[in-house]
Amino acid sequence: MNDKNTWEFGTRQVVYGAIGAALYGVFSWATNIFPLPAAGNVTFRPAVAVLIFFGVAYGPWVGLLAGFIGNTLGDALSGWGFYWNWSLGNGLMGMLPGLAMAAIIDFKARSDIFKGVTWGTIGIAVGILFASLTEMFVGGIDLNTALLGYFVPAFLGNFVVTVILLPVLMIAFAAVASRRGR
Amino acid sequence: MLVTWKYRPRNTIVQRMDPRTRLIFMVCIIFALTIPEIWDYRIILPLFLISLTLYLLARIEWKDVRRVWLYISILVFFIVGLNGLLSGRGGPSSVTNIPSPVLFEVPIKIPYTEIGWDVPITVSKTWFALNQMTRMLCMAILAIPIPYTMDPNIYGTAFKRMGASDNVSFTMDLAFRFLPTFARDFSITLDAQRARGYEIDKLRGGLFARIRRLAPLIIPVVMQSTVTGEEVIDAMDLRAFGTAPRTWLKDLKYAPRDYVLLGLGVLIFIACCVLKWVFGIGGYFVPEFFTKFLVG
Image (cartoon, rainbow over all chains, first blue to last red; front, side, top):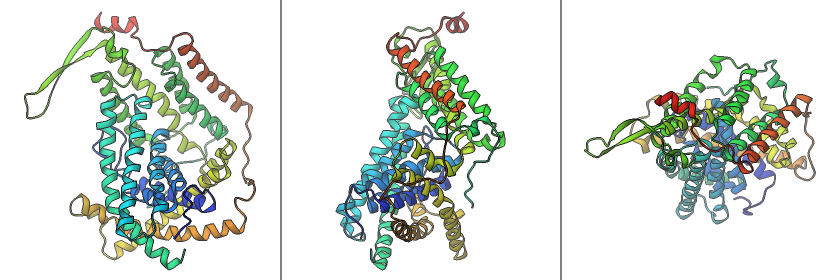
């Protein structure tokens, strides 16, 4: 279905990293107007499922670039400026599911979908935790606010979106890839 | 729906600057405040004034940034400020450790229970909240003008000239080029689904049902983009992408003003580190005049 060399960084990764970033940017921008009941700048983002999908389908570099650049684009389009820690957190959120790429053979198989969702959840947890904890230094919030005000609502929102939309994306991708033959 | 960059050419000194200079200067200020953990108003205030000057020099119209400022104000004053005022946490431990006169107490109670406690608002916490808000604004107002004043076409070149690899810079450049295309695809998909009776404005059902019903909007755009990707990969491979270093259409050159701002940024960063780690200046303290002002 695709090249299974996890850490390869060639033309395919450059192109899909850019496509993932642009899609994540557009979808994030479209939903940046829906804030989560959280302490800070945390919004409801169905686009996270797209980011996780790009990580799972094309590997960690694509996930990292799509998350980092995509979040930067989404924030820039919304006029919010640049928050390096949230962009890096989003990069991690896309990168970690990419580690599952080599283990996923059939995108419509239940076990492979489960792997994708599991690694996606790990990615969300690590990425959002990184962004929330670094906000203590950048935004000057305390640990309680970082965990309860930022991490928990953002994690739950992203987790729900991923559990629902990632399997749909993976199944649709399996159909497209089989038609395309690569 | 149309994605438009907030960027507009303006004949300002900020826009005439090299984009690398502005990005590096912003990083210098953020690092200067966060790495040596500066909490001294005598350092924060001048840095804030420098940031504010750069923001004003960008001459962004108020109507463009009104919503952003509303959002930033809520974040800074009501969330960060209130958090600092009530808890005194998020900064150095000395905020709550040093003895400080109590101004008043705020009773906080868990709704529908008798459990509650009185949170003392001290002079130290109040000063900390003010410091905290200024510190955060200092970093935010350097970032806010970027989307409004930096040409999206030069981000890729800027990152390449800052030392990023061809692959990373090209990803950045391609992402900016793809963005309007995918936004148009999304708009077409939305219209097509609406023509089939899909009502985006009336998504009924619980949270799960609502999210699932977003699939008809997201899936077609994502799948079409994966097909487009293969075509772009073929085109790039035919042009031997990745076999040798690339050349870039736009070139960037530092002007004397760029060297001045770059020097200032690096100087600020080094000065903050030296002041804090060598001379012990830059830590948190409550100035005498503030205590006198509040408690007489």
